[in-house]
Structures are given as C-alpha cells and as structure tokens.
Image 1 (cartoon, helix red, strand yellow):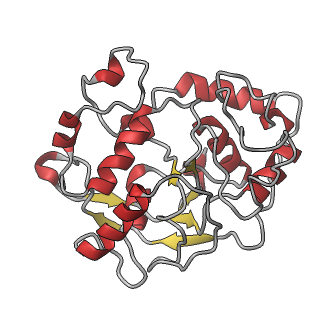
Image 2 (image 1 turned 180 degrees about the vertical axis):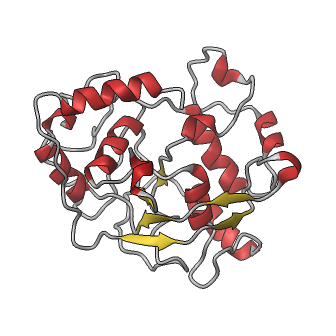
Amino acid sequence: MKYGAAAAGMLAFALCGALPFRVAAADHAGYVPVPAGMFHSTLSGPPDYADVRVEAFAMRDDVVTNAEYLAFVRTHPEWRRGRAPAAFADANYLRRWAGPLDPGSEAQARQPVTDISWFAAQAYCESEGARLPTWYEWERVAAADATRFDARQDPAWLAAILAWYGRAESALGVTGGAPNAYGVRDMHGLVWEWVDDFNSLLVSADSRNQGDPDKLKFCGAGAISLQDRENYAILMRVALLSSLGAADTTNNLGFRCARSANPLEER
C-alpha cells in the first residue's frame, strides 16, 4: 500500500492517550468463514490471466451500520466528526449525521454508515480485531448469488446489479438482506464498499494521475486491463475506488470487515 507511512501515523494517532480495547459488534453482525480456493478475478491477474488463490478468511456478514459506528466513535472519540484530522478524513466525513454523537433522522440505525474514509474504516475494523477485505476477497464473495458461489455468467443477475447502479440517488435501505451462498448479506443493492488495496486496482496514466480536480473521470483505456470487459458492474466499482484517496468520503460508500484465518496476518 502506498499509504504505509500515513497508516502508521493513523495508528499512532488512534492509540495516543488511550488504552487499546475492542468494541463489541451489534448482535446481528458476525463473521462468516470463507474457505481457501482459486478464483477467476475480473481484474488482471498473474501471467496468462491465471486464476488467483484466495486464502481462507472470514467476512463480516453485513456492512457496518450507523448504530455500530456510533458505538465506535463513543468509545474512540478521536474518530468523532470534527476531531479526526484532515489527513485521515476529509471535510465531508459523517456529514449526514446530525452531530458528532447523533446520526439523526437522515442516518437511521440500521442503514449502512457512509461518508467514511478508508482510514476511518480501517480503524473501525481494527476495533473488531479485523481489517478491510482485499479486493480479491471482496470480489470472490460478491460473485455469489443466493444459491451459487459464482453467478457472474448469469445475464439476469448482472442486469439486476446494473439496474441498482443506474437508479437515481435515493434514501439508503437498511441492512439485513437475504444471504448469498456464503451466508453474507447486502454485497449489492445498498452501498459500494472500501477494500484494503483500493489504490492498487488499476495502474494507468490517465487523468487521475495528472492533477485533474475531477476525481471521477476515468479513462476508458483502463478497461483494457480487465479480463472480463463485459462486466460493467465491476468496472464501475474499480473506477470509483481507483479515483479516491484514503481520506476521501462519499455518500454511497460504506464498508465491511474481514479477518484472516491466521490471526498473525492481522498485525
């Protein structure tokens, strides 16, 4: 990750003046084991587009909600709105909340928390003894529908995801949707999600690398690096994540956490 130094600074900041402790997740949240296996990623993989191996891990069964994030900032005041340094969260951090400790009517308890930076999401996951999932971990679980571990060849399933992407912005739904084949909920249909390695998904000399203030510009040539160029849903996610910095926030981007099978990998 290119934010190694900044992440180290974040850890020092988070631990300053406080003893480390964990926040218990809400009752409905849990972690679902995902076995190791080979996965055909839409992104370019090793030479000759070979499948990638995803090691065993556990995925949080749903995205983090406003209620859960409120519990986090109550016990980690350094991450309250107005206190998190600009280097770790931009000016729109938690902007929909009525106050630093009051989500208000526009951010219901069971809705996904949004306007969260990568740094803030990572700090929350660490409070659960977890981390953000890698792109391959997220993509593998997101490829499942209710009965199949890989539904990506089903045009109807892909069309349903794209239909959600194409809807005009409206009030967020609530968590607790039907589980997919892995037992994980709401991978599609609520919010887009941070991944740990968001800033390494694409490497291209497009407008994002030229100081262009329009971060959402995405050069079409970036699609050349995708194995499955017909999977526009994945292309759109990659385009969004690749346009962001670690301190950026948006009103349709939330997160969930993951845990490695080997606890030492969390350190």
